[in-house]
Structure formats: C-alpha cells, structure tokens
Amino acid sequence: LHLKSDENERVSFVDLDGVLSTNITEALIEFAEIAKGTRATKPLYHVSISPEKSACMTKSSWQQCWALHDKVHNLEGLSFIEVEHQKKGRTHRHRVYSRIDIETGTARNLGWTRIKNERIARQLEVELGHSVIPGKHNRAVLKQLRTENLNIIADKLSYLSKTPPAVIDKNHSEWQLIKRGVPIEQTRKELADCWSRSDSAKSFENALAEKGYMIAQGDKVPVAVSLDGKAIPVLRAINVARKKVGEKPIRKAELNAMLPQNLLDFESAYDFL
Image (cartoon, rainbow, N blue to C red; front, side):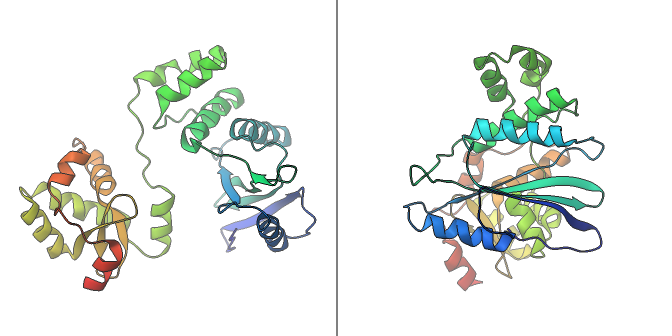
C-alpha cells in the first residue's frame, strides 16, 4: 500500500484489524509472512470506498459500508489495514485485506468483483441517500438484488435497466499510466482519428505509425505501443474517444479485421521500436 502525501492530501485515520503489527509497513510484512505457509499467489486484496464529496459520512455510515462489502465478498473475519485518505477536500478509505483464513490456511475465494462492487455501491447509495451513479452492469445488479429479496432497493433502481451501460472514463490501469506521464486523452483522440481515416489494415497501420504507435498483443487484448514503450488497450481507447463526440463504438470484430494476422507481442514490439 503506497501512500504519498502533499499539500492536497493527508492520511487522517489508520486501523490495523487482526494483526500484531503497529504500523502499515509491518502489517504488510506480517500478511506476506502468513501467506508463505499457503499456496496463495495473490494473498492481498485492495479496495477503496469513495463517497461523493458532499456526503456526510459518520462512523456508523462507514461501518455500514464495510459490513456490506465484507458480506458480499465473503471477507468477514479476515485481517485488514484501513486508511482514511483526504485529498482535495474529498475523503475516502482504503482497505487491504489478507485473504488468508487463519483457521483453514487457505485464501478466501474472490470472483465477479466488478459486478459485486457495483451492486454494493448501488445498494449503499440508496440506503445512505447518496446520488446514484449508473454502472456497467446495471441489469446484473438489479437481478442480484431481487434474488436476495431486496425488492424495495431494486424498485428504486429499476430505471437503471433502461440506462445504457456506463463507460468508465479512466480505469485503474489508465490512472497508473497517467501517473507515469502517459497523455491518455491525447492518445485516445489520436487512436480514434487513425481509425476514422483508415479503410484497411494497412492504412490503419500507416496512420498509427505516423502518430508514433504500433499495434502489439498485450496480456489480454491488442495494445497501441508508443515510442517510449507505453501501452494502452486499443479498442477501449478508440471507443471512449468516440463516445465523447457522439459516435458509435466499434466492435471487437471490426478492430480485429483491421489488425495484422500475426501481432507482435508487447516485448517484441518494444524492441522493434
């Protein structure tokens, strides 16, 4: 857990629950030592809860948030580090959990985290009276709420079934790229422009080259690699840029049809550049 401080941000609250250590660094080391006795390759789980700036969050409100989060994700009873972080007048809290269940010596199973997090957020927004923010998985969230007989909450959110799935402006990976100096907005516009003025795989490749990019295969999806070796997923970048100007998103099949049959992997592309 890396926390930096400047004039706009500060840590005002730290809670070490279920650990012997007295500070964050020692607690993380303790989590790592516990994991060594298991087969877990990803023993830590990090999450943050960031209410709207105008929200009045009491001690009881935070307890309500974490209680629901832990119940839905099956994290109840696990050790964690909690930090309250204040930045530019906005308060949010982070938790890092040790996924290792001491009694069983195994890691608690996590799955469908994004859908679960949206469900948690929508439920808490209703219960705490905060503004409701549509997500990407609105229908799945409503279905799950009704499955658990939370029909009053589902009824209040029923209009979300007709709301187009939200496109998150910047995901975690993109924020990390921004921290490393990647101009995300400029890159998106350039990639979308390259797509719009291309009518074949070759013209797309040439347009990208003119802007200083080449396409490579990332861990999961095709990425545009810049001259300094930074990579950004192509399909998402193009579609976020197109949405902002009112254009229809392109489909994965459309993009694949405009790519070379044998894409270089990221490392090879970086060497080529």
